[in-house]
Amino acid sequence: MSSVPEKTSEIDIAAYMRGVGEAARAASRVIAAAPTGVKSRALAAIADALGSERAALKDANRIDMERAGRNGLDKPLVDRLLLDDAAIDRMIEGVLQVDALPDPVGEITDLAYRPTGIQVGRMRVPLGVIGIIYESRPNVTVDAAALCLKSGNACILRGGSEAIESNRAIAACIQRGLLTAGLPEGVVHLVGTTNRQAVGELLKMKAWVDIIVPRGGPSLIERISAESSIPVIKHLDGICHVYIDTDADLDMAVSVAVNSKTEKYAVCNAMETLLVAEKVADEVLPRLFSRFTEAGVTLKGCERTRARIAVSPATEQDWHTEYLGPVLSIRVVDGLDPAIDHINTYGSRHTDAIVTGNYGNARRFLAEVDSASVMVNASTQFADGFEFGLGAEVGISTDKLHARGPVGLEGLTCQKFVVFGNGEVRHR
Image (cartoon, rainbow, N blue to C red):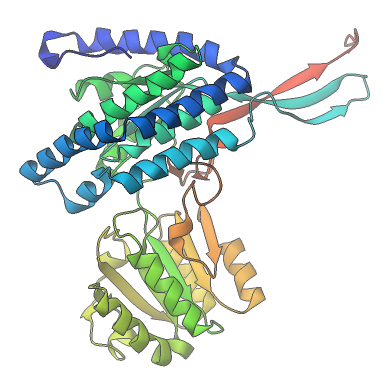
């Protein structure tokens, strides 16, 4: 993997990024044609390298963590930055899970004869070169590389400066895997400079890059969406809801709601607003108050909520807020219709859940809530590529074109029409 001198002012960033793009485009043609066995050999070698270089990965991460402490990095970003044994184990498991998934490349579906005698179908093919821009999370480096590699794409990875040492150590493991399988190093390229100009150059490289995937806070994603001349797969916010229905099992409701918020705060699939049906509010809100208070969660509520439990008032802005921390807004609603209306008005189209024993209400919720992941009787924290069986994800899309929800192998491919004939010609 090529690198950039530490003093980035001494190099031409635009020229450097052009070189990265050209190498990625050339490598994309190689990886697109690579047999499944070659890709599998690379993935297995990457997993082995992550395990054998565990100490080096943690040493590199320690440098990043110490720098984050000195620079006063926000706690959610620090949480995402940590690379301990458990995080390394998850990375290894993610790579192996991607390896075990069926290879989507080359799959032909919907093949059918036409009256003219030709057969028409669709073949799944890689997107080409994918640029991935992300903050803090070093696991994204290996998740993105594994998914792009398995789906036959080359990728250009630009991680945040706060994780540069961790990302470099992970990238070295990825390069070992590519070398073992005889694949070019340009299949996965970690941008070696922390100079922000590199991001601007990447967003203009439509001659070499086919898709941009941003992962980070709203300001990063908004900037990329505004400046990119390349199509973007993205989500901005994770304003996720749990609605406790009139017909909910209240023990289940308490368990799902608490887990949706507290399993991990600084993630885009954490619940930020809890909706409770009026008919069960008297019974369930005191139980939830006790559990959330015990967990250290600050609660805000509407007037009907505050009539039942002692919480701060929720403002209009709270319904629009992704807290990414131990803060939760609660609203009591009359039933299913106002719950759906609230979610479709204030939600970010990411992940929303209902807790109910009513099949009809569950089906209506699934059909009418306009989000990328909609759940019945399950924690919103399951909205994740790994948990959905995708092996990992390069991100979550709340857009409606091409990919929606966790973006795994299928989301990193598209389809083209293929035609088989036996000498047929067209006569108009």
